[in-house]
Image 1 (cartoon, rainbow, N blue to C red):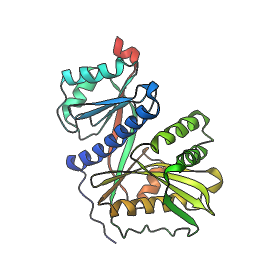
Image 2: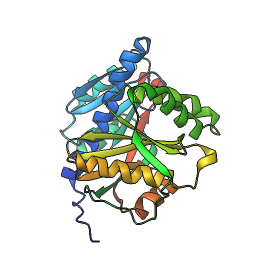
Image 3: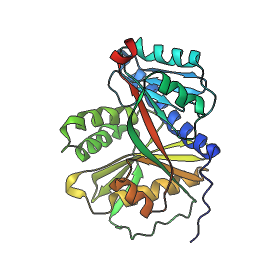
Image 4: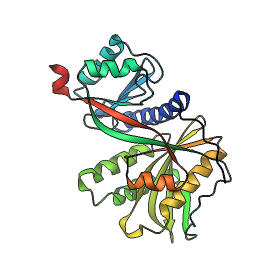
Length: 278
């Protein structure tokens, strides 16, 4: 089956960047309600989302810098003050199609590239079927409201071998189920074995939160979660599915195997707190 992929230009990039930006802003809003002591909040400056989810949180950064509007020195001053006043380092997740003004300012202010990520996308429809054969014993559904702890615990168990991030994953999972994300769970013989989240913004569906407990890996749980989330999103009016993966990773390989293409490679630019005070 031939799929009609939108051209990966600035218009597509804006749809994808805004979807992830909105998803993270909604997470920050949920964090503010669940843990007021963190002081989680976000602002929009020149259509750039600057988000604070606590010092050291991977969500404490900006999204959309220069992708929607030219960034001025005054805009950057305001963004930087937002982070430094909260004791946080300054990080910007920047699309390569952003206006040149963003890159000029980043260079002039001493930012350095600290991380890369590939943004992948594919067309979707309600009758979507992935090429690989599914395990019919794995059942997928959106969790009930009272199952938030179960979903977060399953996500935690999927990362349990990585002790340095596992507890953060559980904490973030508890916030995720309180946000506007749709938490999906995979069950095998009624046992929770994997998780995945879906965030819808307009006609774009963002896939996140993938985790499978070690004992249940290689049984098709993530394949089933991928297909069901994409099909569900299409029934809600989405025409594009997106996800983010490290360049050259197994996640990217699996995504491309199921029809995703790299739209562009993003760069995270960083300036730690000490640098910003020099």
